[in-house]
Length: 115
Ligand SMILES: [Ca+2]
Ligand SMILES: [Ca+2]
Image (cartoon, rainbow, N blue to C red; front, side, top):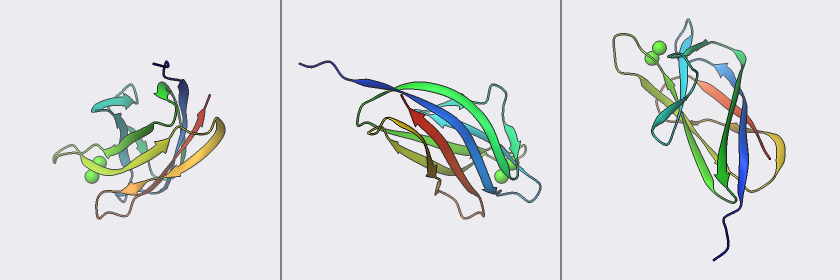
């Protein structure tokens, strides 16, 4: 059996084009059921881009899913959407749009590269 080829997936930036909440979203990112970014509870975003600098090993040709959440203080956190990345082409940076998971207004994209 051949050894699995792994790549390093580096999440570079999170772009916010539209936030879900009027003032700002309190965003965090989960992968495989656990929070991978940021180190604190969340980062406030309304527009522009935030550096992520998260790296993880992925299997070549594998599909990797990330969830983007909005932290809420009084109600359960909102799953805004997911990013589906297929680890098939080295290089980048590439940009993947968020697949919406709620009825809100948010629009985000993830910038990443594969090494
Ligand atoms: Ca919310
Ligand atoms: Ca919130």
